[in-house]
Amino acid sequence: MRILVTNDDGYLAQGIRTLAEAASRLGTVHVVAPDREQSATSHSLTLHYPLRVREVEPGVQVVDGTPTDCVVLAVGELLPERPNVVLSGVNHGANLGDDILYSGTVAAAMEATVLGIPAVAISYTGRDPERIPEWTELLTTLLRQLILRDDFPADTLLSVNLPAVDPADVRGVRVTRLGRRAYVGSLTRARDPSGREYFWIGGGESQWWGGPDSDFRAVHAGYISVTPLHLDLTNYSLLEGIARWDLKL
Image 1: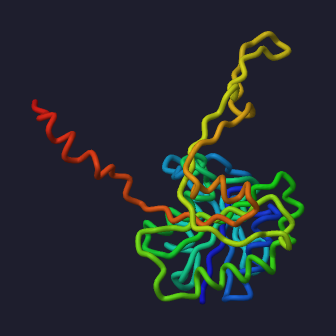
Image 2: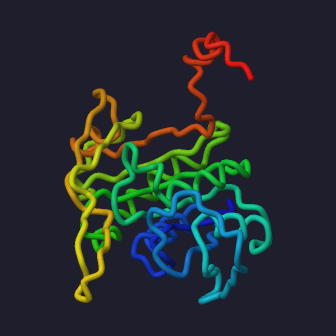
């Protein structure tokens, strides 16, 4: 099996090294990753300046672009053969609920799905990325069940979140749906030492809601969450209703 590994934390991140190690036990791994952190870049694609690639070690190539750029270049030009699967992560931080809309990690897997390649995005919900290597064995076991199969769903990627517990204490795996999250107090308005006004997005507190099968409830209870994400964002339940608006020009 040919496996492309990428991420949004950059090629030096602990998470991608752990994922590449786990994946190497299941197939031939090629790493194509950003040269720096690209968190919250979502599905951004670089269009207005040239991208440059360098090989930092055998099987590891670095791109001065986004996670989506990495997948596009890897599949289109850099790899000798089309990969059988794309793995993105392990992200340093959770990708639960609405976070997936901003996540470069999830976007890389989504781009692979657009290209018709099975893909899995993996995230660690703990705050200490130095503990991610402890998950190598468990990740190998889980990935073997996810990617070495003939019935991987079409037009769908899997978003996996690892709970912030010791791997030995994981209670199991739950297939989940996306929860919802709202941030409170995440916008800071202040002045720099020169007196110029600036704004800072980030931080604050988060409020969660969702049903008993939501992803955040699973990881908070010590389970690994596996959420299938579909490319089609159409709200089918509203098609007929909005058609009755009888919109005209």
